[in-house]
Image (cartoon, rainbow, N blue to C red; front, top):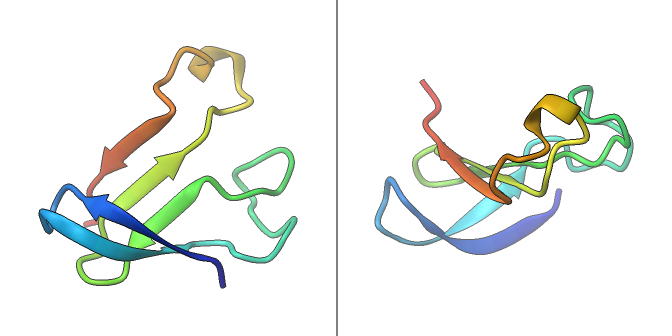
Length: 69
């Protein structure tokens, strides 16, 4: 599984993030199979990196923070 170190908005610290669908081509939410979703291993907050291929989301920011319930 792919991992990166990023600042977690919920934790307020640099934390390890894991890609939710780490295997190439395994993401059901991305047309190219490359998963843009990364989860903080400490608190579960989700970081979405990259632009969506969907036209209605093309203007979305490159990085979006979201909470996992």
